[in-house]
Image 1 (spheres, helix red, strand yellow):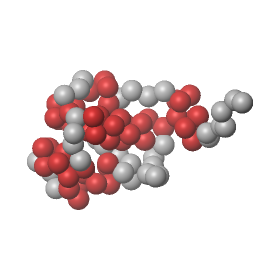
Image 2: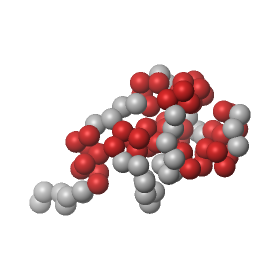
Image 3: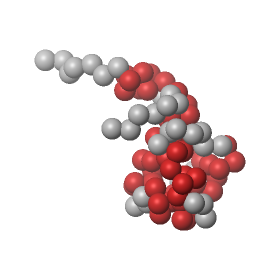
Amino acid sequence: MITLEYQGLSGAIAGNIRAEAVRAGYTQTSLAKALGRAQSMVSPKWRGVRLWQLDELEPVAEVLGVPVTKLLEYDPLRARRDLNPQPPDP
């Protein structure tokens, strides 16, 4: 399980990037290579330990083949539910 140090929008962006990368067939290492970055620079952002900067999102979106707005999607109600899971109704 990945624990995000930054919650809220920052955590959502990191999660969106991970999800879109997996959908596009990228690993953390292959995404770093596609971005021309060292894996050690992408790793803490991938894990949500460091923040993605706004000016980094356009090249990431380009590589992943999605609009930047896809990476910025955030549903605070869903985020709260994800942090406080409830058992399903019987």
